[in-house]
Length: 168
Image 1 (cartoon, rainbow, N blue to C red):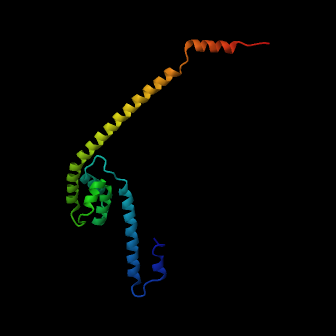
Image 2 (image 1 turned 180 degrees about the vertical axis):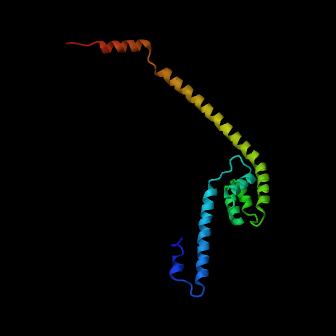
Image 3 (image 1 turned 135 degrees about the vertical axis):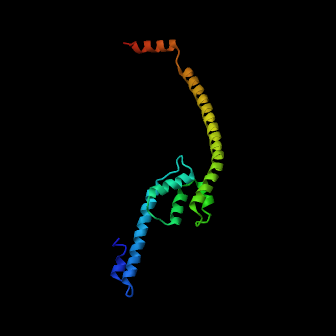
């Protein structure tokens, strides 16, 4: 911290040196607090929670720490699914976050089944296509093996010729 307020210490304000230094220290300390909070909340993921439960979980992690509501809103917003982020990012940041979380839950409920069914259908189609390709490749491999196997008489003739030596 001393390094960050060094300039203020070296060249103090002639009129209010204490007040300027105090403001600088508060600013530096609050920035480092925000970084620490950001790091502790950046690893939080939605998992099986609803979006409002995610907000509550993030509040529990913060405990008694007081942070700016807009800062918390931005941290929470980053953890939401992308399609929800896009809608809520244009909202009024002064709105009650609890109400916003309820709205987000309703949006997520309506969007989730549609997305899931599309994913299931496309993944089922992919799996079926892969199974068909595997069947075709298996048949081709079996055909190649049958065509490559030498006949029994050919193997016997070849093995005898290896053991026979010619002397002149």
